[in-house]
Length: 202
Image (tube, rainbow, N blue to C red):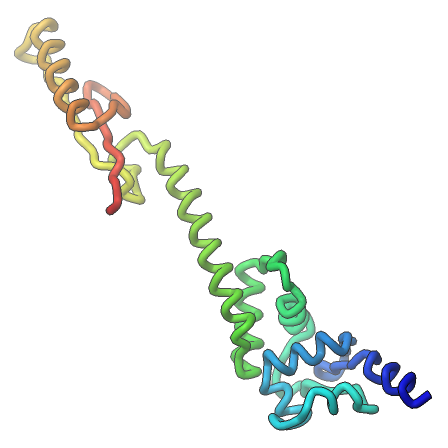
């Protein structure tokens, strides 16, 4: 009978009160993970030397994050989602990342979550760069190449002193030279021809 009672007690959920108006129930395994990954909370509720088996056997399973910490319920729920996300499926939005950092700054940090946020930021930066570069490939004039993706050459056709035949001959020679150098035609406006060559980063 005592074994059954002990197992039942270990399986009871923990309750975390946040401020004056909200409380959250956590499975024992998740509550322990919270204490492991955020040792400041363990220190607030127990002490650094508290044994996890003893915590699991506690009768009192209600703990509080006082309102003086200014932790808001939706922000703390983001922390819980990050801790539960063993398969890295939860990708918080930029504003949510800011809110997570606010909680971590207040409660002494969490290496597990911080490392995950760094990885998410790297993925976001990579996606952003890919989108910017994809948009940049559509640029047809030097002034619009904000990302500096191309080297540019401009040909201005002046027909004032040349016959049409001479102009075409000169134009073809210049275009052929640019093509040999790896430039491709991009756009033409009022006899101003733009050619571009993709910059290859080392």
